[in-house]
Image (cartoon, rainbow, N blue to C red):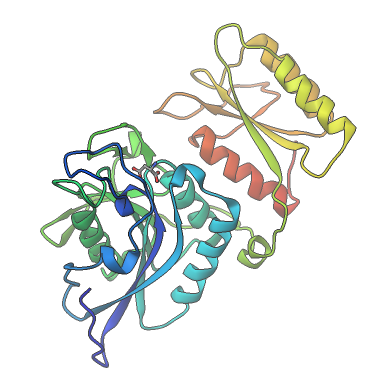
Amino acid sequence: MAESNGKDERRVVVLGTGGTIAGRASAAADNIGYTAGEVGVAELLGGIDAPPGISLTAEQVAQVDSKDMSFAIWQTLAQRCAYWLAEPAVAGIVITHGTDTLEETAFFLQAVLGPSKPVVVTCAMRPSTALAPDGPQNVRDAIVVASTPGAQGVVAVCAGTVHSAFDVQKVHTYRLDAFDSGDAGPVAYVEEGALRVLRDWPVPAGERLAFDRVAGVASWPRVEILLSHAESRGSIVDALVQERRLGGPDVVQGLVLAATGNGTLHHSLEAAALRAQAEGIAVLRATRCSQGRILPRQKEVLRDAGALTPVKARIALMLELLSGERSA
Ligand code: ASP
C-alpha cells in the first residue's frame, strides 16, 4: 500500500467487507471455484499507488461473501463511514464489497448517510488469484473517485464506470462490466486516473432516517419480497398474515411485491396483498422489469416504489417502518 504521512495530505479510507475481490481460488485459471472474502483489505491495496497528495488507510469491517450480507454488517459499515467522514482530512471512503448485494449496501448507505463526501463501493468479478484479476484496477479507480474534489454521495465503481447508488444494478453473472444504471446512465467514467463526469452526483432524497436511529436498531422490521408471475398464489401472503396473527418477534411487517410491467399484479396476489394491507402490513409495489419506473395510474390502492427495484424498495420500506412514518 502506498502510505505517506505528509502534513497536508488528504486521506482516503478503504473499508474491506470481503467478496470476490478478496476471493482466493486454488488455480489461477479458475474464475468461479473460489472462496470469497479471504484476502485482507490491506493486502488488496498492495501495489496500488494512491493519486498524488492522497494517503490510504485500510480497515477490515467484515470478511463475507456478500450473498450473506447482514443488517449487523450494514450497521457497522454505516458507523465506520460516519466516523471517517467526520474527519476533516478524509476526502472520501472506498468500500471493497462482493458484487451480489453491492447495490443493496450502496442504496442503504446512501439512504442513511446521504454523504456530502464520496463513498465509493467497488468490487471484482474475478478472484484476487485469477490470471487477470479486475479488483486492483477497480480499487485504483475507486480511490480516484473518492479523492476527487466535488464528488459526493454513494456510488459504485466497476469496470471504469461510476454508477449512482440509486440506479446501480448487477445485470450480468460473469462479465467484468457487470453493472448498469439503466435509463439514468452512469454518473461518470474513470479513464487513466481521470474522471469524465456525465451527470450530477447522488444527493440525499427527501427526509433521511436519523443515522443514530439505524445504528441502535436491534431488531429490523421483516419485509419480504414476493414475485408476481403466471399462476401467482395469494396463499403465500395469507400464510404470512396468519403467522403474524399468531404473534412473535419476527413476524412480517412489510411486503414488496415484485410486479409485472408498470406495477401490475396477478389478481390472486393482489387480492391477498389487499387483505394483508387491511391487517396493517405495509405493501409496496416495485416493478420486476430491469429498466423503467412505475408510472402512477389513477385509483391504485397499493403504493408503488417508482424507479426502485424490489431489493431497494425493500430497504426503503424497512427504513420507513423504522422511522415509524409509514402510511399503508
Ligand atoms: N458471491 C460474491 C459476493 O457477492 C460475488 C462477487 O463478489 O462477485 O461476495
